[in-house]
Image (cartoon, rainbow, N blue to C red; front, side, top):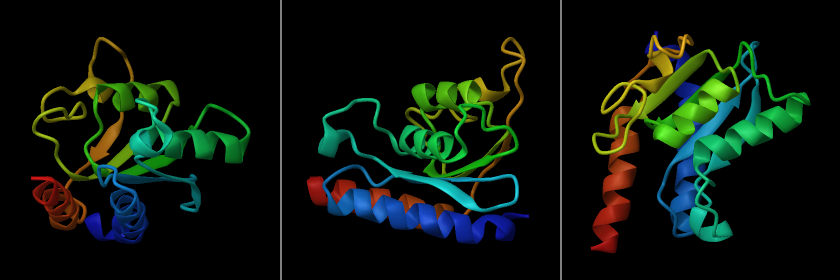
Length: 151
């Protein structure tokens, strides 16, 4: 099952490296159409744009919505190198994305299974399918290297 997502995660990792090269936390994301085509890419742009909402997931979701001409991303898949935070989990729900594929878990701020599980909370009614651990070591290593260099 995880091998199915390797190529898409590879593109998300490319985006994460671009974020790191620009001095931002290395998180990258892609949105796949129902047929598996990349319709949106994103990387953290908070530092570059001075925008606290410019997380990789939000950037990719906006690009995908623009590509499709609709905010509803029914049938799409979000692939991201790091588990989404609360804001990004909310964006996933708002965009009606039914499937999330993630690399590394975020033990401090993750909101799709580690600290919180917003996308599968029965009180909300939405159920997002979550696949974790896809190229997790690469994702975690990229983050560790980035923060090590900051210390």
